Length: 86
Image (cartoon, rainbow, N blue to C red; front, side, top):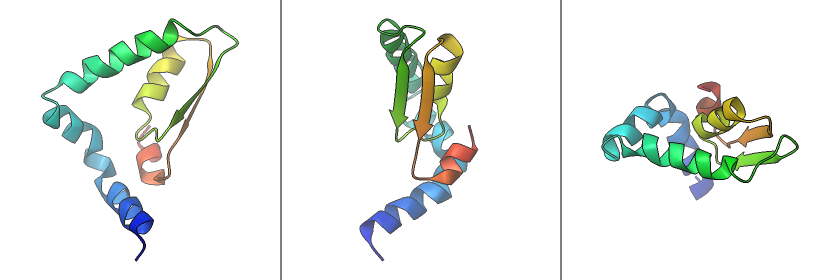
């Protein structure tokens, strides 16, 4: 099995637990880090902006950007199980 297939399979399997695991691993700090990131990105956006979130995972950052701006936001991830959670 190729390395890329192994990585894909891992993310397919862990998708239901991905966000909660990140919360535990970061001691809850990842939420504030993501919020700071979103706010920084929004400072440079206009209603005509387009934002591409590569390796979007469960799409939480893309969703937050879309909810807080008029920019066109697209989230992309190679694991459809991750995206299915958004």
